[in-house]
Image (cartoon, rainbow, N blue to C red; front, side, top):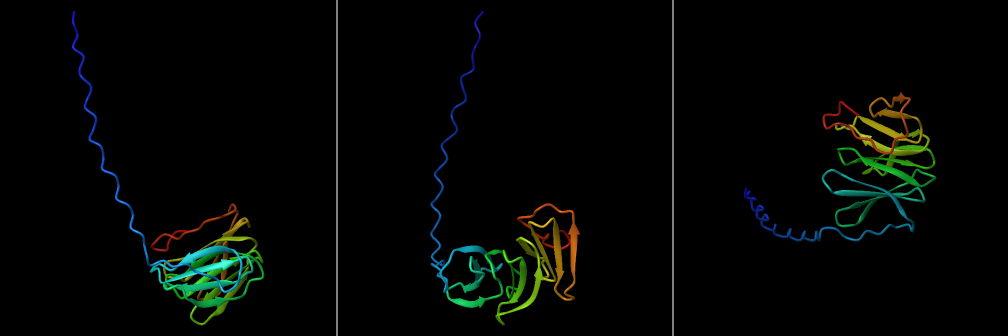
Length: 171
């Protein structure tokens, strides 16, 4: 008895190599007015502003051309987290001094400050009305921008990242 063995399927044609990604020349090297290591960054949704916090507690905001447009002070320790509100004019920062601050970038001033041990994660709701804060504490705090009220979700684990759903109804 002879059996016919089917011939192997031909190799699929080789895929063409992926084109090289174009270099984005819109980015520029940024320098901080103060020496120090940048320890946290955040960017506005439209890419118009970039914020960086350093080990000395300073927060700098650059525009797309690389010019410093704001220098925000208010921390006595290393900046550990940053988040822009959707409006691009509000910036939250957390630091190793166990404080979270919310700044009006245009006015170069803090509008809220709250204690929080070990902040590592910050997130604004899509309407900017709520700020969630997580970190090494076993809770997540939620600051209401309009009332200044802080609610907590107890019994949380340590938290290094937070995000609201696009509609803002879920954290």
